[in-house]
Image (cartoon, rainbow, N blue to C red; front, side, top):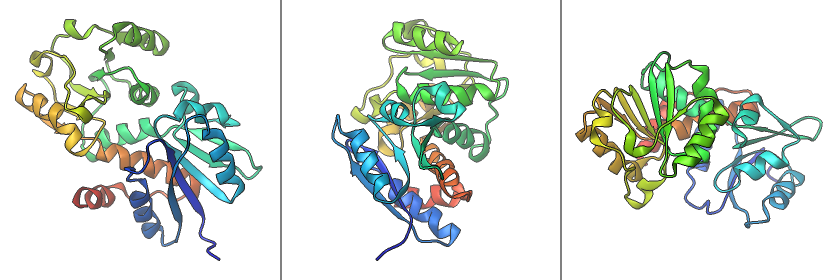
Length: 269
């Protein structure tokens, strides 16, 4: 019988998830054996799937689209980050049998930008493109870095305005955006279908870093547009993916993985 501790990522779809490869690399760093699987939960059956996983000896789980709000709802306790985001991407089994929900997306993003890429966030002007769950999840941690301002712009301005009001930041309609942003972060999923956010090239004129939360080929349309429009540096979201996974791993096991070699390993796959 295999007694290796069990972890999983829940999503729908989830077959594309790179989480198993990432967490295997973390386990190698720690010198332990773990099991990490992908679980495709039925829409409407997420809570039951999570309950069954933990009842069968699961120790912790990651949660991806479309279940982050449901993960928040089923958690018995929440971290401050999760409460602020209203979404959970990490489930931790506590010693008392309860489940604590946390959100490590913001840590993944800000660590990647400030540590791996060496770009200062404090005092900078930040533009977030999109107003979905990906953006919502990172704003609380982004605010901790005390940028000069955070502006949200979204295809549906009302959604951006609502999110901006919730987090006490600013919202500007896409077609009214001007330049002057130090850091521009694309949190839309348009790149997956080759679509670009409808922003003017002049928005990138003074941009130090253009960052896409998705990674690989899906990030390239936005990053190429940013480079052509004057962005000095561009990066996709692979470092964010590995960084949020590392933060989850630390919460489960008390071991802090080294992110850099794992980003390199995943890039070469």
